[in-house]
Length: 475
Image (cartoon, rainbow, N blue to C red):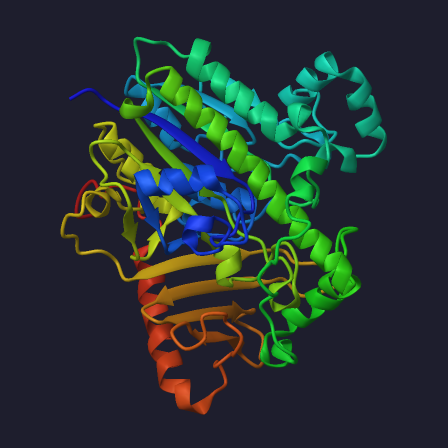
């Protein structure tokens, strides 16, 4: 059997409900809707962390945050870490990456160090903003439209609202198209990873996309009066206090929050159009039937829900549940929907199995191929997310662990084991409260559920401990 090509498209900070096919008619995503209609849409895909670097490390290594060690943005992944693109390259694939990678700190213009990652083509650009001299998007923009580049250097928000033909998202699509048309080695199967930055904040988009949502009725913000009163203190603090120069939800007027939300929708539609252009080239080049297309995102966005913005130590579904669409003509039945709890650690094993390569021993995820083929599978009934942070200087460090199981979501808020404190956390019944508005953690009627889930969480954490070492002998 001829091995398939693989096109992995990932956005940054796209919520699970920001695809019309997932049930949100307010967002315009015709190309993603068509992709879902031609393949499979997973309704419950959870990432392993609600911020970029730790989540991306879980994708590339198929390991949980507590195993791979990249626990927070600004932390470098350990040198020598093996990523699945290297396994594909060693297995005969021609590999390329366009856009951000973010397995290392990229703060203050730092150029991301390279792993032995297997990418022959590496067109790295961490984000659209001023930074590293190695940012390939900046080099292209400076050469193509130096006037726009210089103007945007003076006001970085202009990178968000850049005319479409010079926008970072257009550049991602153009470089991916270049790989498909001319840069790949035709005699080899390929992996190309297209990492968009949108719909990440800052909240801006080209004017033509903003105007698309002038008269669209957006779903209401998901909250209620007094919601945060029975939620952990860090949520109340974050809701009311700005951080790193960015406004809190409480800083915004109702109109300003509406503008933020419409800009977010506009960014999603911009990416959708660029994905459509990439998929059209797959067709033109005769590659569509032999290429697995995966569309997903590294984490979500609060977008005013729960009186919060952006991301951070919050494990609501809008933060850790993401789109996942996979198309493989001739293998996946068109229009497939799966409601199992799947995770980002499952993508690398899926891709390697599809490529006919062995699963590396350290992998902690499972291949999705049995689910995609409609085969009977004894699938896990839980999902795990882990947030570990040194914390905002104004607050204590935030360490959270989420277990999603059956109708329940348990979120433990950890403290120092040597400190006497009131234990706090979150417990939601997603069957009766899908919006996660009523925290049942302290509800006496749900004490038994909480204890049962806490015991299950201990078993899950034991099951995902790092046991990569091979026992050579009994002693």
